[in-house]
Each structure stands twice: as C-alpha cells, then as structure tokens.
Image 1 (cartoon, rainbow, N blue to C red):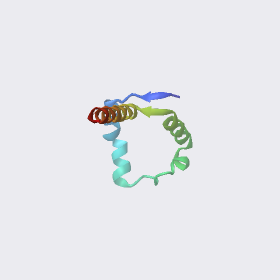
Image 2 (image 1 turned 45 degrees about the vertical axis):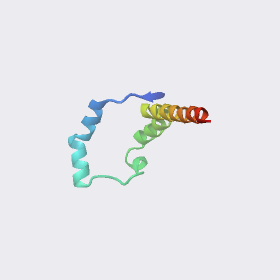
Image 3 (image 1 turned 180 degrees about the vertical axis):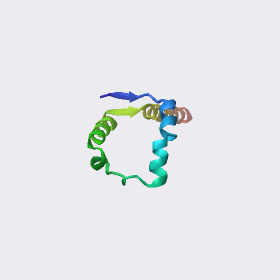
Image 4 (image 1 turned 120 degrees about the horizontal axis):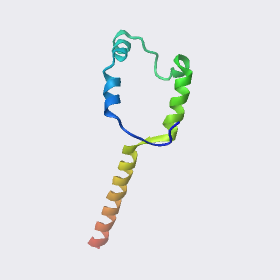
Length: 82
C-alpha cells in the first residue's frame, strides 16, 4: 500500500480513458450504480478505500502553498498600507 503523494501519470490516464473495456461499459450500459463497488468487487473496493484515505494528490499541496502565499501577500500589503 502506498502512503504519501500520488504521482500523476499521463500515459495511464490516457490509456484508461480510451480503453475498449471502458467504451463497452459506458455505451452498452454494463455499469453498476455509484457506491456498488462492495457488491461488484469487494477486494478492489476495500483497497481503493484505504488508498484514497492514505494518499493525496500533488495538487493538494500546490493549492495549500498558493493559498498560504496569497494570504501572506495580503497580510504584508495591509501592513504597508497602514
């Protein structure tokens, strides 16, 4: 199991979006409703639940840093205006 940041992979992202299996499931209606992962594949659902709770995307850190820098910038500007 992985802990920490997820590393984006454009090749895997593109392959998953353009696969034949996805095309058949989406267009022919062979899909279970959202939240039915425990019924269709419980082992995969358990793995994904743990994985999503123990890792975070790299964009989360970038957005936090940008928010922190933005708030510091506003703080320093307000100090200089006084």
